[in-house]
Every structure is written in structure tokens, then in C-alpha cells.
View (cartoon, helix red, strand yellow):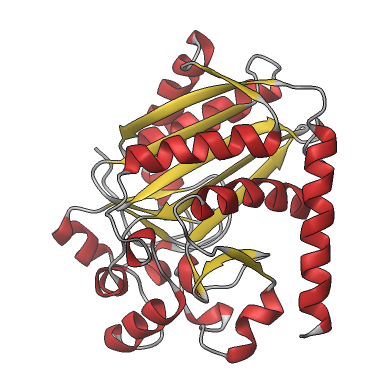
Length: 308
């Protein structure tokens, strides 16, 4: 066994112990249950909670949601024309939105999306970005394994030692590009996450794939390789829940499992809630003046997006 893999497992074990010790004083969090919104509404909602938490007006929050219509979210720094085939997106009725967080493009369709917004220095979290990824990743691992999967951590250099994934510069796709301590099933990535920090608060949101179609994703995103080769690369590096379970996974069942896993892993109490008045007003403002605008979604690009 590689020495780096041993160190990775030791780090994960120590981190699990840290979570358990930190949970001795049970905290109260807000849980916003599964809802479906447009790409622009979803991103405006996440940022509204993030800002409100920075202002001390909102509690730590776990939010679960879906996307209607299906959409592609761009990482903050991505260029629209190099990442997305806008003509194909228009033809298929796929919305495109830019995220507040970094990373690469994600197609949001057959999935469950989560968002965690909380102070970065309140246990079980710490100001270290990697620690936060591992804490939330532990919750996701436990949720996936609740469906009988053998989900596991794979460190960056271990995953790509076999050379099956594309180099970082080759693709705009999140699920075929490497990131820290990925969650894998059967040697393939099943979750993608991104994080934003500011004023002592972090926002981490990400996707848990229930189903996926490499051909569709390759058609919607741009790559230096041809569409057929790109689809093959995506299929070689990405998987989804329904490829590993006997019964089809329902998004609501997945949501319940994710909630239970966060509660048990973090040792916190969740109170069902919704956006407060301040968050709702801020969400509407961000929707109108940011996420539905070409200035935000197309910045630095010659391409255009028409938001509903």
C-alpha cells in the first residue's frame, strides 16, 4: 500500500475523531428542506444565506435543492465561451448561471444539491479549507454508504496515478477534473463540491449524482477533444448512485439520508425552517441585479445568456 494512501487514511481517522470530540456540545442548525428552483433562484438563495450569516442574522444552515429547468453552473473564474456550448444549451433548454464559488462547470439535472453555510471557526469546523471539505465530506460519505455503496476518500495524487482522468486544463467539466480528497465509488467521482469564504463564514455547495449521461454532458460542454472522446473520458471518471444500487434512488429518500448523516456525523440538532424576511428580500435583489444579468453570467465573455 502506498505511504501516501496510508497517511490519507490516518488523516481521515483523526479528522473523524475531531468531529466526534467537537460535537460534545450539541448545536442547533437550520434545515431548509428539498425545494426546486431555477438556476438563478438557487444561486441567489445560497448567496443571500451566506451574506445574512456573515451579518450574524442567520444560523448555520443546511439546504437541499433541485434545479428546474436543468442548468449548467459555471465556476466563478470560468470563461463562458470556452466552457459551454451555448447553442446546444439553447437547443436543449438548459439554463446557464455563474456560481459565487470556484471550480468547473456542472450539469445540474438528475442530482441532489446541498449547501452548507456556517461560521468557519465554530466546531466542528475550522478556518482551514481542507478541514471543512473533510468534515462535510464525512457527512456525504456516510450518506452514500447508507445506500450500501463503498464510498471512500481518494487523495488527488492517488486518484490520478492511473491516468484515466483528463489533465486540469483539458476540460471545463467538474466531474472529470481533479480536486482535493474526492469521494469515489468504484474508482469514479460521484460528488462535486465548491467553497467560498468571507468575513468568517463559509459557503460550500455541491452535487450528489443520482443519474448521469456522459453523452449529454459532452454535448453541452466544450473540450479540446472531440465530443465522442470527451464523453468517453467523462464516463471513465464519473459515476452516479443508480449505477450501484438495486432499486432506483428517489431524490427525497436521498435527502432524508443526507440530513440524517449530517445530524449524526456533526452531532448537531436540525430545526426545519425557511428563509427569513431579510434573506428573502436579499435573494430577490440578488436575483434581479446579479444572477439574471448578462454582466454577471457572461463577464469577460463575448457570448451571451438570456436569463428568464
